[in-house]
Length: 603
Image 1 (spheres, rainbow, N blue to C red):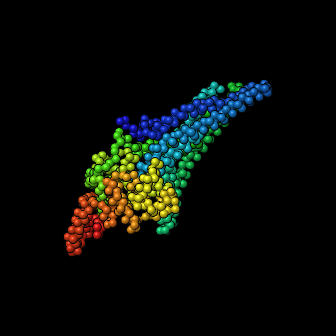
Image 2 (cartoon, helix red, strand yellow):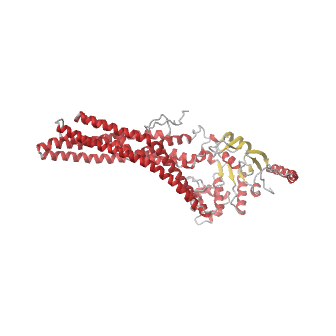
């Protein structure tokens, strides 16, 4: 299969300097193809721009000496028609640029969405998680602005210079030297702007992360009296952001002013040179005026480019970041064969797990297997690796080594969407979404049937609870389920986990916020799932839930120290406690190893 991974080589002077076939390069090539048509309109616009210079040339050299009003009227009518066409093509070009930018945005939406849902799983810093969408917004804004028109008009600068040489070689040389000076200022702008623009972008991203954190945790900040402390952090972050932006603004303002002064000097100098030529009878007055106007038109694209240079630098850096992000978040190749729903067993072989962007192993060489209909409780003290193991079992965290297999196939042999239909997962943070209860239970599947939604709710024991709500399954729960209690969120999360009859269900502390009725409903749900030949894995220490399971795995410091039936494991724990009690009383240890790590009393 052809390697489609993007190359990271990015030429600073061209958006299209890449041989890669990544989504960003493809979108840029499509935009460049569409820009070809816009370049044609730019050519027409630049030709029409000559009308002002030609009009002044004819007025000074023909109308004024002859005092012919008919000629003046005819020339004025022609130039008015030219200006009307110029305005029409300018508006058309701007509208086309907006549509090209919109199509560019649409073409990258799938890759951007994949990056947004993948980056948090790769240990990306919070400041960088929202960067792809910001970069795309910057690119779209730049592509629909006047910035690209400068580059479409620049190829016509030699045409204007050639016209000036035709007026007179001295006028042409003056224009050429002035153009070289302004281009030199542009090169200096390019070199000096890289660092300050990057620093301004990074400070903006860090400030936005702090804003999101404050908004998300506003209740805790207010309740714990941290308002003034976070105000200090906010002021410091905002001050840093303003400082970096001020540096960038100062740089661009200084360089832009230098370029503008050069243009004024050049235009005035052009008039002076033209006047000298008129006095020496080397040129006419019309040439003097026309050359000044034409010189201003020749330098207009450079001035536009300099005025939008900050946006240009930000857009170019955004392209580089998007290419990098698309590389690290590229979707795995689509499997050649769609595997059937697993129905027989789960096998974990020498599984080693580390947190994203970390080399420290949290789970090391864990192996076990479960047949359909079995239920496993994961036991262990805090930080023993239970949650990390559960994330690896459902494919959230990739394994550093070892494999997780369903019916003999490693879980990465399924597409993530297909695997998700075979897996149910309830994390510690339930993470419901803004929408109705029905939408959250069916995982926002637009093809979900009412029967499947009600079935999942009944298995989870939440059907009657939902019916008691004001609008039943149509109740809007708000962002994160804010309109529900913690226990209600957990029970609806359980219904979502069991929706669609998944084969493997992993529940991480599913009864942390449940009352007695909720725990009883959870135990019944586990028994129903096992009767339906699903494999259920639960992280919990409460006897009421463990009683519905038949197998136990004990973790200690990321390693499996016991695996077997619950009856066998609890018997070994009881014997270990009985034998160890006298020794512990006689000679306590500074850091005693747990007796199979926090197995609940009475289990």
